[in-house]
Picture 1 (tube, helix red, strand yellow):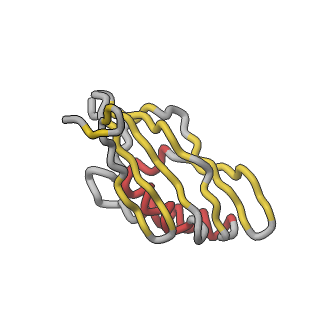
Picture 2: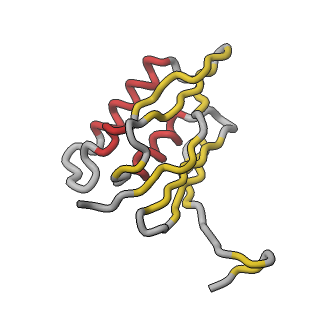
Length: 127
């Protein structure tokens, strides 16, 4: 069985890396999970496609056969993005679990931060 969630938000990732450098880092990220029983193989479901090229920059879009999946390596994915994203850029990865729980990451060059989801009414937190 396992816990299913849906990747609900992700914008293309802008990078200054060459296509070869980008995919070499991607392979290393996947290999880094070897032996990790909880996460090994879970980055394999993600595929990167070139979305746009402009001068020294390339944008990659995350593709999947099914966005509702076992996103067990979501944090490893966020760390990878933080390693390849261009300086000054940001990326959001947001997920919604089968139980309605939301989580996500705010990603910049070298940094991954958890997104906090706060329920609010009239601009004031509830709960």
